[in-house]
Length: 130
Image (tube, rainbow, N blue to C red; front, side, top):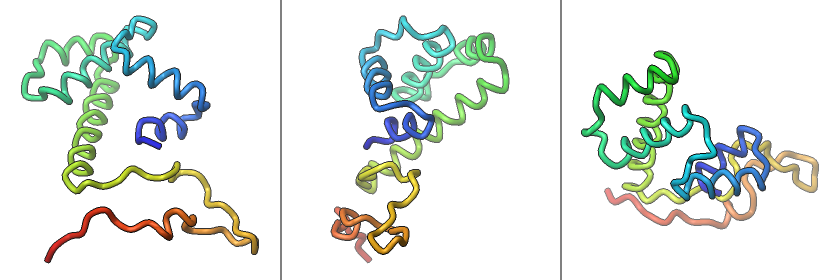
């Protein structure tokens, strides 16, 4: 499960809603979304592709629609996601196999299993050299 899908699942979206939302976002036709959502997604796209080109006018437009505090939240979260993506990509970290926020499954003995069989048998894809 990808990070975006996992975040939507944690937010309470059903599998069908997740598929619909990710399909909508990937289409770049965001007309069904609210003005605030459209503006936020365009801003996120711009920050991901050319953060050095962000202007004060774009930030002022966000503040006019979202308010000062929510604009700060959006900018911070987009920045954090871009940073985490770049770190994960540079280290070639694999995506999680499942939703890591779900409670652990109970084993046959009734004890909660900390690691599922897939994770026990998986080996890291990259090794760090000394």
